[in-house]
Length: 190
Image (cartoon, rainbow, N blue to C red; front, side, top):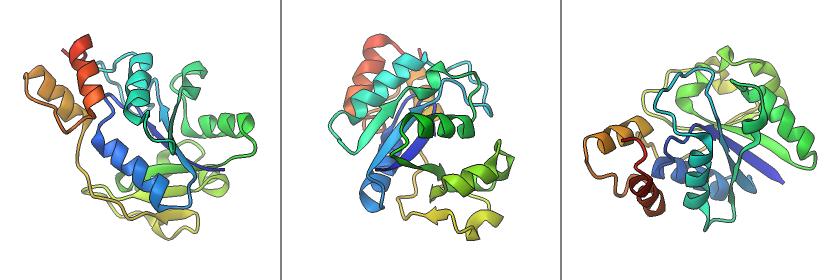
């Protein structure tokens, strides 16, 4: 199978994530999209980060009705911070029959040369890139292993959702209903 890997902290998972994942899973040659829930992003320090198992639980609930989407906790047992190349190698070793592709936003493409072993990621895995607001141009746009995928231009951030919760504002329609209920019931981000 050809698997697209969608990395993120998903703190919380929201409809923007789900729309991109579904677009990749149904509008490309990918057979499935796996949400790789990252315990810690090497480029971010976030004191508002929920426990990784809570974030994984939210993702699993959000995608439960879609057989083309899956969540994985592969990074939970890896050294932290875990780097994308290390996770890709671990997944390839664990699932040698699968072909993995990395899904990133256009805003990350300009920064991609700063990633650990970015040349190896391009050579052995390749990128599926979706549009993001205010993306800077990148010299990698012409790379043969970079594929641009037409997708809705979404500007929804988990930070905005957390700010809404702290201000007691509605997050209805921004997160899946099951995720919103879980956040409220467990008093996440308050």
